[in-house]
Image (cartoon, rainbow over all chains, first blue to last red):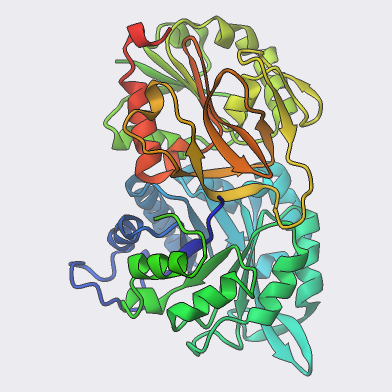
Length: 251
Length: 201
């Protein structure tokens, strides 16, 4: 049976992980390659690297990092952040990334989704959607969730699927950082109507939250960062818990 | 030992090259006939669309070369599909190494297409799954699949049972991505690299 996926997310700046981690067995807590290897070993189903820098020099550092990660781990990983052209994607895929994720650049130029899907195949194009509930509506935001756009989240999710996205990474800015649970209702609405996988992100604090997002929320994958980095939730324990609660896992 | 990855227009093979490096295998990425013929092992990967890939293979005569190879050949993902008879993807005649057609997953409520993520394989047969336990998980991303047939050596269930692996003579194939399928994928790739010629029958 196709399993649900658990995806740790690593924020990268200048080739290093940004947020601290709580892995005592990790000599250099800022080394994304070592952290990636630990997560792969622990049974993470996939990894996401989010580059929060944008200068040309730092992009070169990112490419080098992608190469090292690809060389080290044997599970799929996605790279996102600052990607806005076919050339950007080509460089990352050639360095060994399995998928790339675009966000603001897709909002600015929706045709980019079509171009990338045509050039590289839908299977490696993830569209990240940051959403916030404003005046009774779910609205797409860009620039790390700071800037509202004119797009409605549910319609935009449908549009990127039609344009050839292979997956949607849905982050609720309302729940992100709260540790009070994922945005279940919105995730269910989007995943229920989409024919492509939806990765839910934002709000994970307890193992129960993952059960909720996979059952009621109909998510295909659950993504989180700090709860894994600070070992508040241990991936092997989480996956066993989910399996015991009827959610199919790769154990 | 000389391992060749066949170079053609079907997507990114970087992960395959890294997987070989993790196993300590040296390789050559080439579309040169002499190099391919003289290899001990040939890997035929693929990500992309079937008709475009077949057109490219025909242009370079690779569609005749690949079925004539005598050493162990491993096709993965779209590579596997191109080794079948026919693919529904843009109505494509393929190389016909395996006696089975490739069909699109029908739209089915509750099942997303492409089939994306980790799924288990069972009914394992043949040398490539030596040491792999039944229902081990591997990573899939595909919208088309070959039906189960006498050449099936591993089955996966998604919407319908389909061939996760195929084997005929010296030809082996996997629908999933061995290179990013964790330790299971690595073991399958390693088993392929360690095939003796005697086994390739």
